[in-house]
Length: 461
Image (cartoon, helix red, strand yellow):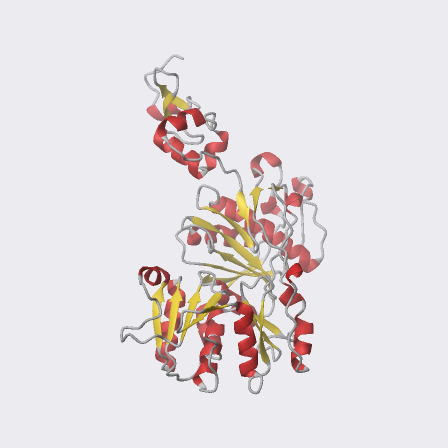
């Protein structure tokens, strides 16, 4: 190659596909990643391979395991092409696997599927671009994001993609899973909710959860959208929700609520999704309609706090320790403690792990009850002063026993896998449903605190 003196360094670097320089053994010392104009060192190259950098699948040195063995010991070098499919949505490493464009692509697929379920329109995603048109008008979807580092960035892409796909957006802003579910109560016309979140994943994970008003995940036929699902497993069905009518009938009759059989719970296993390259596949998911949807902002946090007041007592001397993973959940508890004169000792998850005894207050006395609310605040763990962590079905049975003579329109049920407690409100306030299923850690904590505050109930030891 003849070098023109007028060529810039970046011009020369673009002409080099991968290795820039080589050592005496024939292995490259510096590499140039696909799509980038500057070389990187072998250490960066190996690090990107190990973490699944998005451009590694096009790199000619992606199988450089021999070189990796020379500089690493016991480190598995791999390239990740897809994102993880979870029970309620997807997860992946921020920027490496899910960036704003990929989030928009996924949001378009999810919103298209929601529209298909709502309007009963048969969509053929394998059609040519000009024929790929579906009816998504007047389908409203609530969208929010959590406090993870990459969530606001992805939220912008998701918001834009859903609107461009013809759906109306209800912007809930910074929220949690529980407060986003509350948007359904204040906006009955919403068909689904998308939460940009990495809850349940590693520190650098992002993704989204998509669920309907009855808190069920939105099933997506991924192959219809050109997505490869490497290992397809049977989704776990929440049999506690499926059999809720039967459970409520048994409770009203005074008979014990039937516990779902173990065979009814099919474990959910994650799989890998390999998304198509839209520029090569000819599938233009962003052009499903010829008009954009509207956007409405809601005061999701204020509405949610007002709803939470229903579950917590006006005043209580019961000593409560709350361990939380999200700063927004901590703010809510601080607000409740001051607004309702509650005795709440608040700790973050990190501080709780650092302490030897997480349920001992400064005075040395142990609190009556301890709630640990996960990053996905639909999940809560309840333990007593003796550090006994109670299973979900045991807490649900205690709630039903304690409320039988009083607030009997609310019953508690454990999910089939035992991971969550569901409250069933047959009065169904603020909804047109016969009953409302509530999956909310703070609401459950408030109900337990209220029952303990009466002085007539005591949690099992």
